[in-house]
Image 1 (cartoon, rainbow, N blue to C red):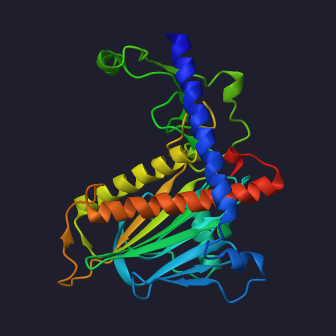
Image 2 (cartoon, one colour):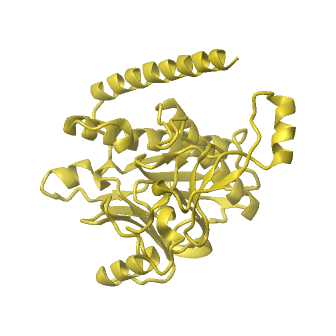
Image 3 (tube, rainbow, N blue to C red):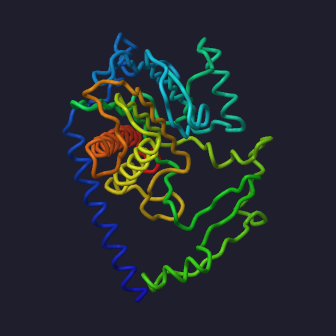
Length: 341
């Protein structure tokens, strides 16, 4: 039985590798479509602003250290951003570049300091951190009679991870653990569906050599794993009306699309080699204009069976794929591998 499972896993891995090679070949034949590529690679010409066609007045601009999205209106948003997270009102979102050696002791403080440096109001905005090169920002839009949608994504997978898999985690005190299984009752229920599913427990690895955290100095050690640079950051700007529950549904659909893009790209968990569903530090901001027009009805659902959910899924999938592809090509020229993006 174990041998059969190994063979099936190897077969799936080979198929993923084959799909990835085909996508890379197509990507090499395609022209670069990333909006800020020329700005960051050709002497910073006047190509640093993207004006939305789906949200009047929404502009996304490229700067030396950040991408700035600015709406002319203050709008409702739902965000998992490290700065400006939760349900809030905002008119700006910042995606800020940090290098892979960034010391993540206090990301909110660092973002607030950067905002002051750029003479930006620290209120009514959200801030994201990324180690992805900003010229690899992907922006795509969709407009219909009932809503408009813009998706802006930077995608890096140096810390790719698979949700629900065995891997290293940190608790709120920064203590390191290894997840190896689920609680017994869950495992028993799962075994009725998949007999090969194993029983679970959580191992405390804080005293093992591999769990050394001495290189991290922070008054808030729970940030050790939470804000390691890499990351997939997604901004969704929805020009239309949406209920609060639909906002949550929209984020669910976006996360599913992100996971699908990573699976199709053959991205693996950097720790256990399984198909990744995201990275350890992904963040998303969903901003809703809530424009009250007869042609824009109130959307109560945003799942994959809705037109809105389909648009969200398509744009998230495509922008994640494009940003990853840009990073992959850049890394190939430098002689590095997929999960170094």
